Length: 400
Image (cartoon, rainbow, N blue to C red; front, side, top):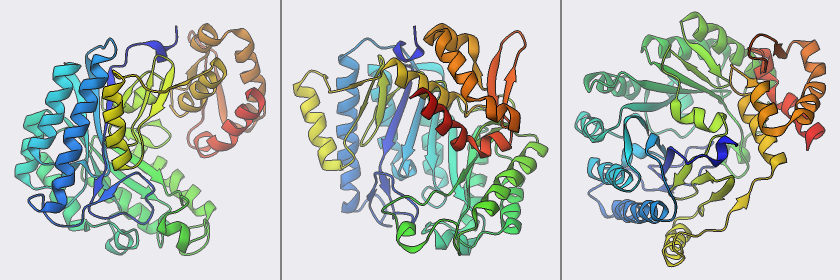
């Protein structure tokens, strides 16, 4: 049976609030401004938390569940929550689903959005992994992206992380940003390494439709780096971070030994998961569903969910879609895909078609076929990862 039919043990919780919208962002968020939570503009945050907890309770009552082994608070900016609000959500998850004693409980946090007391409160509430959205160590580049923090606030945030004894912390950087050069990218990489995070996520800028960047810039044209320059940035990150002892375990992610993100591996291994909150996606019993992207529609949807006893319209994932998802997600991992497991789930014919479609890329050295005791296919690092979209497009064309 597919892992997609296992009871989900991973939960994503979407916190959609931000001080402002970054110029590259197309995420479903609500802007609350710079005022502290005691002001009325944050009343909407309290209301959202109440509705979110209702959704969690309704979802738990509508199906059989297993204890959660990973919980991930993403956004948005989850570090705009008060300690009490975060604790309320975690308590609701624990009461209705049960959180395993050794669960990985992650939270995205932004520099300048929390103080030491709040971080201590998050830690006491159960957070044991944080992901710090640094993005860049150059002030002018941060300002060009619409970020609200400064490089000094990155260092202050890391100091607080160490003070509250949070040894498992990740740091995010973005390549391909406006005005970013190879030399300045190297500087950001070195400054990130000097802070000794246990994990780094390195994302390449995508100019998404409808964003400010989409209105201002054309991809590959100044002040954005060229496509060749962003490819060089990818290679430089791979060389610099692996030389510093980080394992490049997924296209965009690096970790010290023992510090891979357990929650995100659920996605890449195409296992079942559940999402709570505005625009959150779930994959349960081979079915997918997504909550509304707008807050008022999400609130109304939770009311309807309660009326319907937790029933919701779902998209059933076909075997063909499941195969393509397994390939698309699994090939993101440095480990690649086990051909034995793919064959066990989908049969011999799809495996042979996959191998035939990948023949050109085996010759270019972008794909590697491992033929030891556990035969598998994997993308090579860094070139296979760099050209993953080309490889996946071919697979989708041949198999779709």
